[in-house]
Image (cartoon, rainbow, N blue to C red; front, top):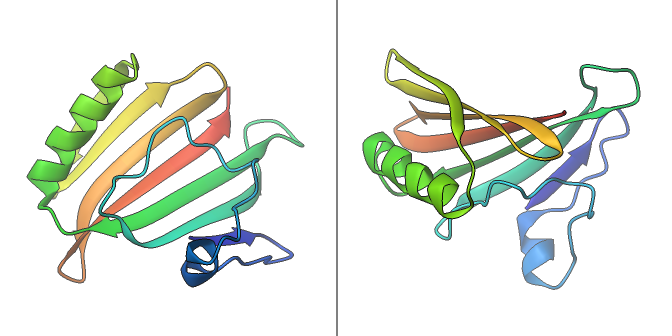
Length: 125
C-alpha cells in the first residue's frame, strides 16, 4: 500500500508492505480493504473538519464489477455492525456515508479507466 502524508509526501509503496514494511497505525482501518485489492494507496491530506484532526483517503482497485463491489461492501459493513447513514448513486458511482466510533467515512465505488475503483474517505468524528 502506498502511504502518502501530504504535504511531506512520505510514501510506503505497495511492494514495501509485501516485504514487511507496515503502514502507519494512524491510517484508519474501520472499513476493511477488500481481499483482492490492487494498486492500494492511503493519503493523509491534512486537516479534516477541525484544525489538527486528520483527513485520510484510502483507495484501491478491484477485479469485480461496481455492482458486485457494492454488494460486497454492504455485507462487510453489516458484518462489522456499521450502518449506512446515507447512500446515493449518480452516473454509475455508488456513494455511502458511514459513521464509526472514531470517524465519519464515505465510500465511493465507480469505474475509472475500465477498472472498478474504491475510495474510502475518513474525517474525525
